Image (cartoon, rainbow, N blue to C red; front, side, top):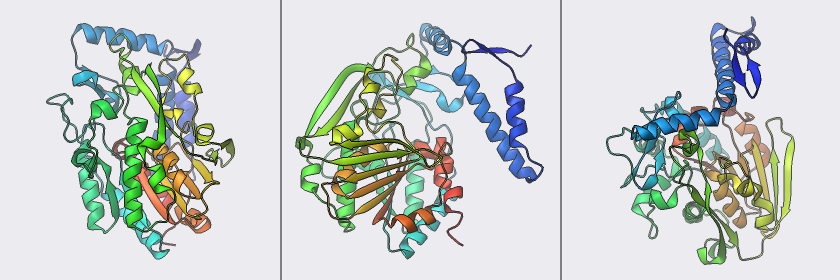
Length: 405
């Protein structure tokens, strides 16, 4: 009774009880115990769901049923992972309720005040939401609060005199150049933007930083799209949305492409895990440092191929550019949307570091980090979806708790 298959092994509810016991401590308050136990049990539940025996076969069979019913919504046990089908084969998650941003704004205000006291510019870069404001392909009648949340947060930050680069709005208004279309600029089967679209985001960031007098080198070269070769793999990727619905429901694969500089580059790229240990280091050209082609050639059709650029997100990433002598140092607080942007921005500065402060990573004191690293500018680069899926990233409770000390 109460036993389940996980990867050919029996799984018992004892796992949940063990998680409960490990999280409980008589030395903690009721509220701390309550929070820790919920987090531990949620983690154990996710482990079970992801390790469910023959999970993908189950999803494929479920997708077959949905397809025969001519469904345009594929429900998931996790409401946040329900997939909606739009026009032109676009798949979407949605933010199905308004996100309360008060605590986010308070934390950003504290961080901005601290950085201002150190004379360090701070910029929130809001990446585009896949469901663009001018969408012609998003499913009609589906409630989605993504853009509403994004706009509210940006407006609240501006009221606090915090610098904002709103790529979500520029994506539909243009900035003297490109207006995005989600069916071309985002993966159909995944939440992320394509690498050439991230390059557009990088171009906008460089324009913004130049207005703030941040010292950047090689701008006319590195921001020129003609100075890059595009390498492309056709029909090779089924992203996170397609994985949720199964190949029986949806089997239209995305193309994947990367941009490689034609000009000389010399970089060092180091990744650190949540224990602060170095887990990977690469040196050489842009391609040798940042491109992880093994993910493209991986036989698993559901392998995340977005991470061909800069690999999986780590707690901390360092990039040093041997060809740039301006001494400029950039700190990026980021989610996965920032990874390709950071690779391009590293071409303009001596050093760039990234911190991922989402719950699965190592919480670090931003105060201590900034005082030791002495960056010339701090960027917070994220998609609006992270306010919904990773609110702790925007609350920054662990990372800014010592700012007032």
